[in-house]
Image (cartoon, rainbow, N blue to C red):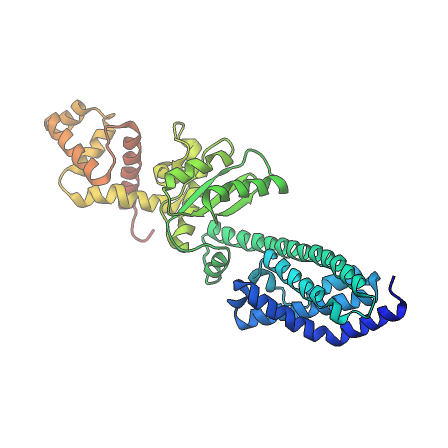
Length: 389
């Protein structure tokens, strides 16, 4: 057992040589780790601060071992919090190991005669404390980043739901890893109200299938905004299991955040209107629910239905508009339509085929007829409304 004088002399030598040890630790890092050599000057200086703090902390602990926890935490408190974003926990532990190796390698130079073994044992014991402290610091940093990211995610999704994309939203979305590109929007409900643990599991499941997806959970409502270059139908199929029973609606194609906001609004309106279509598939596209969305007061759906179903027929001229309207009013009977219009049934068929080519909806099919019937009604209402109203 070293004498008190040997311990005091060892402590004096350590204090006098702490700067030399820190410099040696940085040289060892530069020689052993390519990631350290590639760091910018500012980040290298942060590592230098940590290395120096580690040496100083060991010296303080060696002087008074009751200060173990406080001194160990001071090592990482000396550097800016941004260090945890630049340097991984694995690299932080490499810094600790290097500092320990350097102190241990110089133990014979700094230990008083007879205190060499005592200094080596102290270094090994303290290295364990530092390693635990590093893990705790990084765990706290991860928890803090997670909480911050969750708040930013909630703000971004809320803005998309409200359709209010101001100048701050793109930067907030970028901070979460979102980049402009093909984006899938899905809206539905959860199986039940989710607690914190269940919500976290839902988010993990979604991100396993769709990477950096933005997720909004509001009570029983679930909104997923997934930037993906994969087939949206395939990704939607993978994500379907995270939704509870009931309609799941896919928003229209979107690339920019403004388009994503419109797609999100359309999908939300579709989720509200979907129960009106008893045979709606799951998932169902928001644009396939245009008639039902009109029923729940979705002005965007009304304008889109007029633009893609009524206006093309009207612009085509001829007797297409009259033929579609008469066919629908006659209960979709070709013969009755032909008699009412005093034309041959084949003429009616030809005109209806042209309508299908123009709009993409075939009035001979029940669902398509419902879409066109709604579009024709909206068109007639628009034309009968005085401009001043």
